[in-house]
Image (cartoon, rainbow, N blue to C red):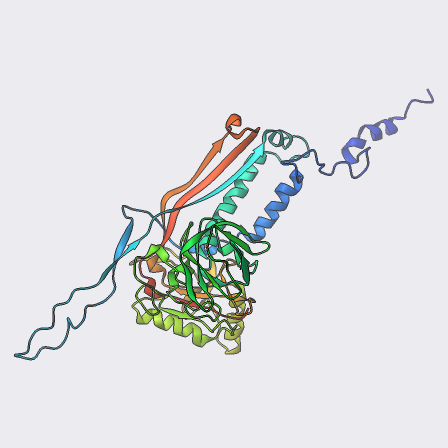
Length: 446
């Protein structure tokens, strides 16, 4: 009887598994055999990624632009001049003005497809359901993919259109790593060869982009050299707001005549400075950083109003948001607070309907900071601060041809692997019906 445990000892042993591990404190940590893939544990793959996405999935610009149904159109026509001498005073017996007609240009706009894929092995789907797992790993990856999908769209809408390169070799060129994300696989990249002018005017397709090193690989063409300008001749994805305000021969890093960006594949001979299809005001500083000033901001607002628009949104990065806040405080002028209201034609949404955000305002115009706003690059390849855009959103819209679709595939024979694959895709495009009432301020210090 001496070997029999007491009642208290028996209860302590029976409950030991509830409060501690007989194998030591480290045993119940997530082990490598609970894996969603062969590289990282399921714990890091899922929870670590969710934390990262919570910090890096601001998609405010995408949320702020109104969405519309695509409609039965592949483009529209724009009147680009008033006619020459068709209107003038006429004396009592004087002759009539010369008959002239308006110049009408055709704008092409076709939907673009953005896709996001994800997947999980059959084994990971099973082990994730076990004790210590994360549950439905496929549903978790689906949720993460949805966040990534919207983030990709937002990045495309805010992609920069032209940058100086620091060098190249063969079919690659180098840009700062922070800028590389603006080049997407399938984009056609043109080049302005330093000293000789445009050397690749029709663009060469991007085959890969390394966002860690800043190396962009293209299909063919003359090798880039330090100081050359690389510009997006045409997009594989959605047109960005930087494409919309761009103009032919716009300044890139202080080099004039640096880009020939074509938003909507315009058929005009060129988007010359001040032409109908260039932004109302595009302000550069020869590739040298400068402080944001109220004069720059007021000029952008003024030019839009002179062209018949009314600014509805000031878009900038977080660095310029703080710069503007300090600037206004220094001048003892303070930002007001109001909910964002989007206008579409003569209609208005209810305050906050589009985004639910409460924003600061300047001269009654909402100020929207977004982490994806593109930055300028100086002549020495240094990355400057983010640009500032003043926009009339009455003429901006995201036209949706097909809302986001979810496709799941469990055909193991087709995949030649025991995996479940998923796909999200959206068919849409950002359209601007009046490019002449959008403006940009570049070459700003951070």
